[in-house]
Image 1: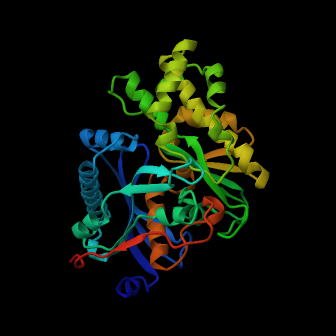
Image 2 (image 1 turned 180 degrees about the horizontal axis):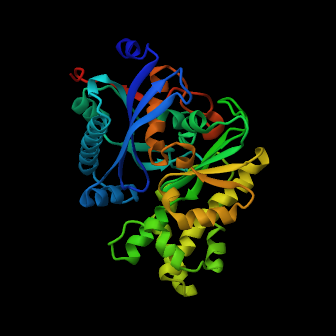
Image 3 (image 1 turned 90 degrees about the vertical axis):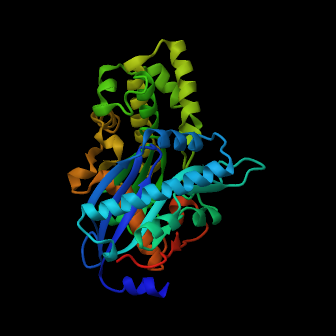
Length: 402
């Protein structure tokens, strides 16, 4: 550990952040510069998303959707994903024209294949979370120390272990004048509220999963096109359709939307089985095709707006909602969100000079940085953990990369 601390003694450091989210599209990799003298103190120098091969994505989806996998299959997937992450780290460093010997560390979230927080665990169940993407494989391939496995400590302290991005949101979007909601719209939607002048210890700092992001939209697009499309590109299908208010109102009665934070969710709650239930009800109501896509898109927009009004607005001013993630590139979704939150200005992270696609990968580089600095990575008011904690586990390479 002392050798790593020596590498972080200076003011400026390079790192790589790696993330695979609930959309199961691939690995997001960001080359990041940390400089404590700058504002913000973390800057993305290069970013790229590396798509999973089709066959690998299907295997990953199957395991993440709750289908049983034997120990051998899971172990194999863990190491295969580690190699994919390692290649992504090498490639993004090359893209940024930086030698890996200059990279101080890699912060890797891995990929969540199971997440059962304490509030969802029923009698006889043990709250637990598991991310795969073997850190030792990444370290061996790159010769760079790897900080990974960020979620278990928070859950061991009774927390939801999610969301973990609010630290990055505070670093990048905190503002003295405006009250902001940073709304990531990945596979799952999650919101962070930053009151004007928010600090890490501010009682109003709140973050939680709002519900489905683009997970249902992507899955429906694949079904409606017989697998030819992986998403509703540009929101074209939703724009052609008409929202079924009857179906939308029924879907908004899902108990998750009324559950108070801290809370988190995932594919276990809003995955394939949930879409199948929606499709059965849609058939009964005569809703299909583009109309069903428009309704699914409206569900994401309305659940975000409802969460903002229900849980965030009572805490303080909300002037702006900053959309990030894949959903921020869906114009139909952004238009619906703007209509649902008329009193709030809806912006994208890109409009504020931050690459919204890179934000999640950047967040885990920040968490790795804080781990190596011996600083807390969770926010108990956000996750529900009993106390602040350093998050992540350090894996050292056999020898530094030359």
